[in-house]
Length: 141
Image 1 (tube, rainbow, N blue to C red):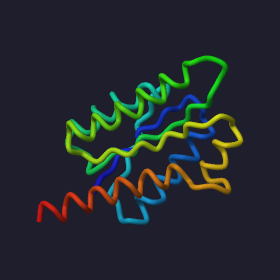
Image 2: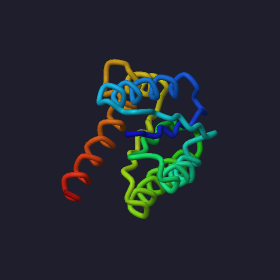
Image 3: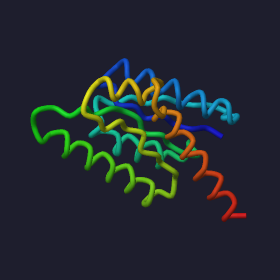
Image 4: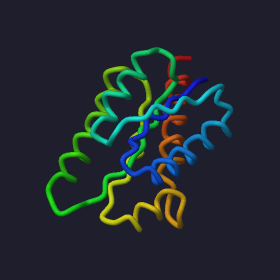
């Protein structure tokens, strides 16, 4: 199987860490190939995920990125719309899409969740995609 990782590059270091975690999970599970598709920020993730899902090339899509709270309401809009958009893509396309976007208050919190001492969000997103692919296969017989 081939999987897509769609990643928002706004925070380059975090993006690289998240991709590494997701890629490791997919490759450990025996993925035939893993394509990494980049977008500028988290707001663009749903459209890129839709392109990937509609292409018919991918068994699943892990959407990765980070949104760090700032001084304005921008954070709330980006997080909510990115999450809703990724869910919409999965529901409309039937292709498993995971929301692996860090939504945190500080860079320290982000680093802790991108391979630091907390849960690795990139790996968790890939695991979610694999679980949903397995469920779909089981139900389709």
